Every structure is written in C-alpha cells, then in structure tokens.
Length: 419
Image (tube, rainbow, N blue to C red; front, side, top):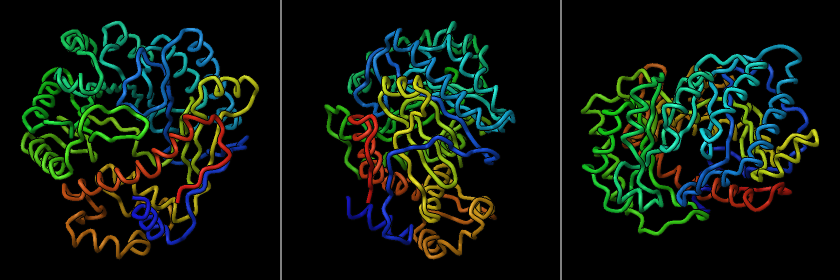
C-alpha cells in the first residue's frame, strides 16, 4: 500500500518531494479576497464515543464546553481581525463534530460572531446525532440561522446499529420533529459494506429516509481506521463493488440525483457537502484550513487548543506548503468528489489548462471508462466512482490515518512527512 500511494503521488505531482508538514508558527493566515471561501467549525463533544468514528472527539463536560466556546470565539476574532474592518464573502458554513447540537444554545452565538467578519451566501449546515433531533433543538438551530442539517443515522436497522456500537434510536420521535420544523436540506448518513448487508437492507434504509423527512442521503463505505474499534469481519472487496453498483443503479432507477461520489438528492435541488469547496477556513480543535498555497491543521487536543488561544496564539499545529502540482492533485481529488471536474474552473484556479497538465491521465481514464466528457466537464462514471473509493481507501489509510494517529497523541508535533 505504501509503495502504491507513493508511486501514484510521484506520478501525479511530477516530483519526488513528499507532503511535508512542519510545526506551525503561523501568526497570519492570508485569506483576504480568496474566491469561493468556505467556513468550518469543529465541535468535538459527544455523549458517548462511537467506535467506528475516526474524528476528533471527547466526552461532553460542561466546564470544558464553556472554556472551549470562549476559545473558539477568540479564534474567530483573531482570524477576522486580519480583514481590517472589511467583510469577506464566503460560500457556506458547516458545523461538524462530535455532536455539535449538544451546544445548540451556543450555535447562534458562534454564527453571530462569524457574521461580524464574513458574509455567508449559500447557507449554514450542521451535523446531528439522531438523539439530538428534537423539536426544541431544531427550532433553536433554525432560529440561529441553520438552513441544512445532516443526521448520522448509519442504519435504521438494529443489527447494524449494534455492530457499530450504537444503541437503537427513537426514530419515531426523530421523524415527528422533522415533520414540524423544516430545513432547506435534510440529509441522512448511512454506512454500507457492513457484513451481510444486501441491496434490500440498504435500500430499505434509503426509502425510510426519503419517506420520513429526508431530501438528501449520503451512503459512505465503512473505512477501517487503525485507531478505531471493529468487532466484525469486513465485507470482501468484490461484494462491496457489487453492492455499490446495485444501489447506484437503484437510485438512478428511482430518479434520485447523484450529486457526489456518495450522496443522492431526492429532487436534485438539495445538497449537503463540506468536502468539495476550493478553499476554506477551519475553526476549533482538529479543524483544517485550505488556501491556494497551504494547508493548515489545528491541534487535536482540546485543552491545548484552549490554552493556546487564552495566551493569544493561534492553535495551529502543522502546516503544509504546497508545490504547484501538489495543490493540483489536492484540488482534483476533492473536486472529483462532486462527480465532475470543470475545465474552466481548473484554469481559473491554476492559470493552466487541465489537458496540458494531465492529458495522458484523462485519456487513460476515458479509455478505461472511469470518466466521460460532457461539454466543459469531465464526469466520473459509476465504474470510476468505485475506483475513486478504492483510491480514497488507500489514501485514507496511508495519509489521513497516519496524520490523525500522530495528532491524537501529540498536541504539537515537530513535523510530519508523508511519502
């Protein structure tokens, strides 16, 4: 796996230079006038910690929450003051976690602070644990300005919930709350490629979602991070591939619109994705920021995050300075998540033509049926989406798994070199 990812990286970036993260000393993260800038806020608190979840999280404790919110507001202020009184236009704002709705009463305060410095044009989204989908929470979030919600269902079926270490949820109360409080987008997340999962069990979850308030779904493959707990056998790759083709075909037959590698919309009018933005600023522990020339990641340690901001310092732990080609690869990987790469957008961002940079790769991808050309777009096919997942799986275990493992154990590592 290491040889595969290294060879692929060298080929695509046209250099032997690895991705080298160094200890961050950023006092100024120049983002002014950045086009298509998004915002992200990480809330790490959960009631209990799910074994399958790899994200930065910690058990809810009120005193720690209070300190965290104050530090978060301080980070927003420090970043916003770089604008010198001018407001920055942004596309979207997403809250992730963790279980952000545990802080439902603070979400409005955080949004208001961000709006001092940023103009948010395309809506505000938040992730919800099923237990947090109550009429009271939904009303509070909507009053705060939230327009999109994503609910981590994982499955409506007891055997799969138990497999993932989840207690069965009161879905009838969840459906009732959704019927009373409306949002622009109501997305529900599911995990596929679990043992004995079939097209019938997966589509039963999909139809339950669309029949009870959802207008958007995300169906993610189970990824086995080394630091998460798994007490079941993984689905074999051949079975996973067959199941992917089956449920994608099912969604097409039903008229559901595929708007990214793993997401489908009931009508094509609703979307929920914090992953396909060209540039973004991240706030909170473990949050990342991506600009044209660099990628920065905050410390994963909650107390270190609080202490840094209380001392007037940014909580950044590691920073990667991109080479031009490295940034291209990063751009293409996450843009392709939306199932299409636009040639004009690529030229606008890099001032180079996509075919000039990756003509042979595009030709091969078309030959093998991974992509097709549609006017100004290269569109990923169902076959291509499977191999996107295959590459994503290798990338996740070789890069993200290693990075997060280090960050979970060291608040401020000296460096990180990913070859």
